[in-house]
Amino acid sequence: MNPIVFAMRRPVTTLMLVVALISGGVLGLNKVRADIYPPQKTPKIYVYLDYIGTRAKQTKGYIVGQLESYFHTHKEEPHQEHHKIVVTSPEAQAVIITQQYVCQIHSQRHINVRALEGGYLQEISVKEGQAVKKGDSMFKIVPTLYQAKLDAESAEARLAQLEFNNTKKLFEQKVVSQNEVQLLDAKLAKAQAKAKLAGAELNFTNVRAPFDGIVDRLHEQLGSLVKEGDILTTLSDNSLMWVYFNVPEARYLEYMADLGKNKEIGQIELVLANGNKFQQFGKIGAIEAQFNNETGNIPFRADFPNPDGLLRHGQTGTVLIHRVLKDAIVIPQRATFEILDKRYAYVVGKDDVVHQREIVIQNEMDDIFVIKRGLGVDDRIVLEGIRQVRDGEKVEYEFSRPEVVIAGLKNRAE
Image (cartoon, rainbow, N blue to C red; front, top):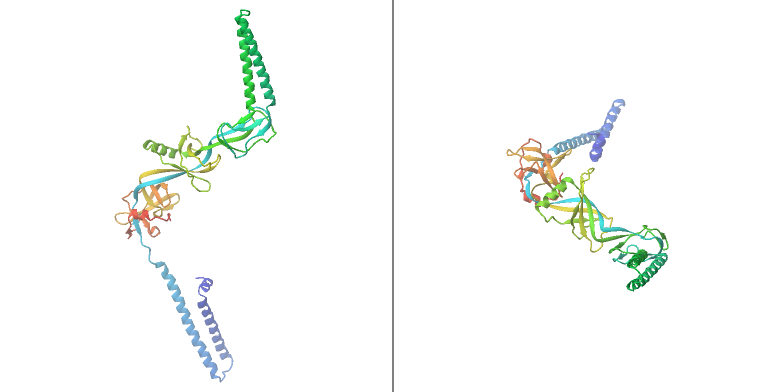
């Protein structure tokens, strides 16, 4: 052992060793002086030297005993008693598997509200974040030109009506021909159409909400000159939210297989960004038509009712889809160990000899693994004492029933 480490661990022993060395040095010097100088007739000196020699021998014996005890104790430490080895078996049971997918939350209707006609923005009837009803007035553009055009076209329509009425009376009196009546009738229809178009253009200056929704940020301010097609704001219908997430091809095939067997697929949950679950449950509303060739995923859409308006367009979250696996083979996670990228378990044979066996994990839960391949309910696996056994070694063990082990699981794998 390193002397410095020994001195730090055994300071009292080290101090006594130093005292013994000093005492031995003093005794040696006195003997040397006795050979150089002539003997003195002082019996007290000899008595004192004998006393020092006796104490040095006692101290030496004590130190040697301490050293032997120390090294003997540390030599015996590796031979401590091994922990008891516990063996159990895999269990077949129904397991609820939860699959998680990152998702994007969208409103079922999310549109840009645009100006249908150009002009100065005369009135803004809404505020950002305000809830509006279908038909509510949101924006109004200066209608002067459009009102004048409507008045002019309406006057032309009335004039055409008068001409048609007079010509019709003359036709009844057989003054004019029927062709003239038909000509004025067509002129009247054209004038009326122009008047309706002018009225529609005038109505376009008053922008109304096409459905119930929430107003987003205002893109234009009062008095701004807007052109036809300019975006004024965004309107979102958040009564029902569409949650999009990507599903790998293997999971898609599992879902479709379950859908064919059981039409009532389990409810879908939504976990929000703060870790809390959304109070409403959703259901699959649509599956897109094709896979993404680059990622191998296909987009799913889950529909969630949003009565309290908590969800907004553009939020993110995590979708939880629950599936039930019947007669799944499960084992505790701590009964396995990993080497590189493969998972193993120690299987105890009929001759009580353990063998290392590779297993394939289908799903991972909090404390258990669902086994896809490698173990069956008739196998016996090492649960406690994995680090004490070796491949091909015969062991003595205690068997614990799998239902008891699974019910009391709290720890993950080593």
